Image 1 (cartoon, rainbow, N blue to C red):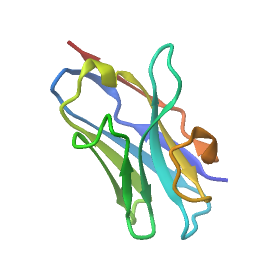
Image 2 (cartoon, helix red, strand yellow):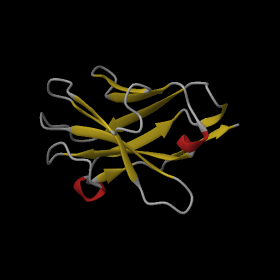
Image 3 (tube, rainbow, N blue to C red):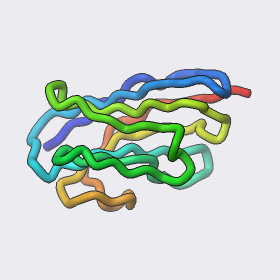
Length: 123
């Protein structure tokens, strides 16, 4: 079983930045993929970004491309989401997820989830 713990959420004004972290523990394989999702009040959970441990390939939703950066630290078994130029539409609970089944933007493609961390962007 893989356990994921997010941190770094908080309140920030529009135009500001935040960095989210997700520490993973448990069984890790070469096909390990981790991603970030978010869910705003009254909305479904949507894909934000993903990264492959093998090769470090990254993938982004169009809504965050150019503003958000996903990265990994192999030694710490941790991924990060650097969020710049935040706007009120980025307000949501952000979730870290992991899968051993390959890169996907679908919620159903991920097997493990963190508890979520709240990001609130004020005008």
